[in-house]
Image (tube, rainbow, N blue to C red; front, side):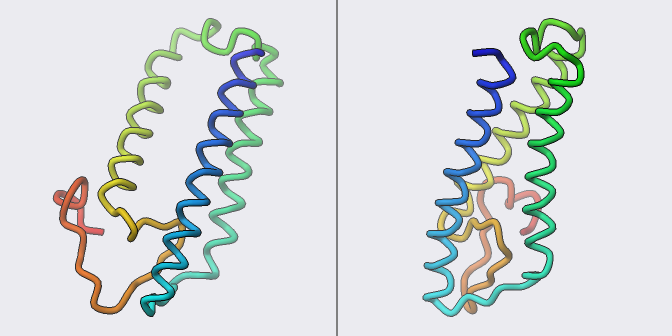
Length: 124
C-alpha cells in the first residue's frame, strides 16, 4: 500500500473509534439529564471533517505523489510534527475529559468542571 492509503485508513479508523466513544459518552450524559447546545452546528462540523478527508485524498492524487507522500517536500518534517503534536493534544483532552468528552456539546447539570489536563490551563 502507498503512504497516502495507509495514513488515510489509519485516520478513518481513528475517527471512527472516536465516534463510538463519543456516542457512548453521549448516551451516558443524556441518561444523567445532559442538555445539548449548538446542535444545529453539528452537521457543519461533520461536513468539515468529511471535506478535510476528501481534501487530503484529492491533494495526494492531484500532486501525483501519493506513492512518495513524505519524500517530495522539504516541509513534511515540520507539518508531520505539527500533526503528531495535535494528535497528542487531542488525546490529552479526550483522556482528561473522560466520560465528559464528546463530539457534541452536552452539559450535564451539576457536573463538576474538569480542571485537569489541558483544562488546568484553558477552561473548557
